[in-house]
Image (cartoon, rainbow, N blue to C red; front, side):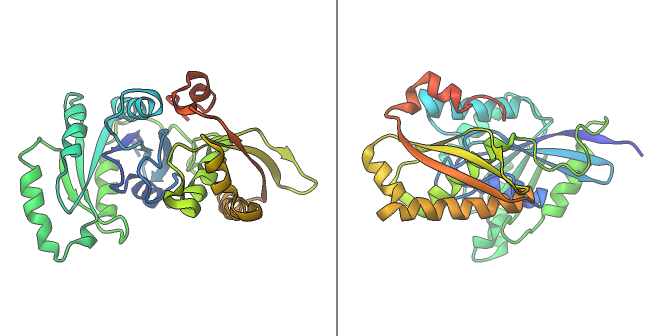
Length: 297
């Protein structure tokens, strides 16, 4: 049996469903999701081994028009992930091509890599036939290797996507143990799960420029570990919002994140969460470096 191994980078503008797609294809939660744009900031890897093929799905940040600080590093992360892939999966919304899709296509087209166009959210169309004019329109924009209408929510056409990608991967030995699905360090995963619950609990009350810095865990008397996490906000007002009355909101965030992490790691996880005001951290190079933005996770 000839083994195949390679990287499939999922790229696109914010909020088209990239993280949800990667989670669905892996079969486990490897990337956080929320309705907030730019929830994903670093590249996140998930491994799927299926028969003779091992595919590393790369969830990338949504490409946007950012020129400095955190926005710049987010864009550079997405671009470098595309450059290092064997195949690119560009994802758009089935309800129509957007001008920001042009920006994504402009970048990936010069890479001259096999590119699959994934037309997501077909379940939101009034009729399945409405995807046909979208396919006709996008096929004139670029010579895509494949054009696949998909629904991540319903799982439509995802088996077909897995089959196509697996057969198209380069021949070579597997890069990871067959049982491995996550590649990122535990501290990064923990920080992401906490940040996800902040976005889901706080909503639009706090801007997306919240970060979580996690230090290594210490063993408890049982089988679990305790991790210390600092939530970075940019003002005292934001700190008060995340804390909530009497610290109730932060307690709820920690409780939800702890349950998700214990499920993901298969052992108890305890969190010691603090909130720290760090004004202007999104444009402070040392802070960005400490959090690992612009670096592979």
